[in-house]
Length: 527
Image (tube, rainbow, N blue to C red):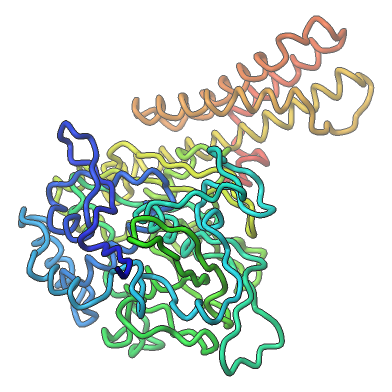
């Protein structure tokens, strides 16, 4: 029997439906046919959820006709509103026609889904199933989440879980050395090796509605304006990987056209899964480079884009990186503010059309945040996810004063974090060297103070937002929070050092004095 695992018929996507079952596995076809009854995806790995949402967004564009570059902005908006109001979800006949027209089999001999069958002959060495699974140790990689696995015990991976890991590799894959790939006709002086996936180490923001159908429609953006290359956005030029022939790994890459290539076609990794006899599990995998040429420039519509003025044009803008130590509320103002040419950050492009939604959809809109804290090359630290409260009523378009207040609170919180670190270090230094005028260096007090400050600052932030505090009360509130954190940090050492009391008192006075001084270095940097 030839092994197969058809994603359109085999259960592979966990979803939440709100019934007693909690969550259940559905096939790709079931997900789209029942999307208007499904609350949300329930993937246990946030990077897999973020990647699959992008795949589903491209499929949504195909099934709804919202990928038509000939639609004007007003026609596109009107069409999406009609879909949001229809209450019937996707057209099952269109879904069947699309899924029948393309191969969605993980183990198809000629065109396995999101894989390259040529690796069977172009790669001599397999990577092993542990290298495919992101929560297993493999080779010399750091043990991140072992779960009892090792290179000596490469347990097979269920096929539906292998699909999730396959998606993560395409979006968040590592850079560096990999299996050697020999391409016929190649004149490359050396193996190009892996370059990082397009989402590696980034933070993604996904608008979320009442149902999966609504969520996927909220993920869509209109065809971008590109006056320099109008032909690049024709529907004939755009394709998802499963809609076209296998690419030539030595050929220059096509532009990252909207929406297919932009959302699904920028992977730097080539993979091939090796199934067991019946296709229920994956026992091994090939993993190598996909393209010898550099990636095409593109801006993902789910990223906050930060601007660094001191950088050259090619590196001035970058997606906001995922940092597991950074609280997500500190990114809230970047989502709510529309921004301008002088802004240090731009909100995700997918948020630019949310003001055109029906009022009831806007009122319940939340944001799913998916982050994967990774270094630029190999090491993975932590993946995480969070769901915001309904927030569009605070957006600049809906309530400019609320958006401005949220931005001011975030800036003040970060400003006082800098001031707390500065004055705590100075207090520590003056405690040990009371007659010195040198600046303080990093110390235990500063680390303890910041550890106490940030959780308390989040509480202060939400209190200020929910009580609609005026601007005059924002800085004093964070000054008090910072002073309390400093007292907490030095409480056990206050009686041990003779000069600690005066030094800490000076630090506390400086923090409270900064409550009325908006010209602090920390605030200028935050702005």
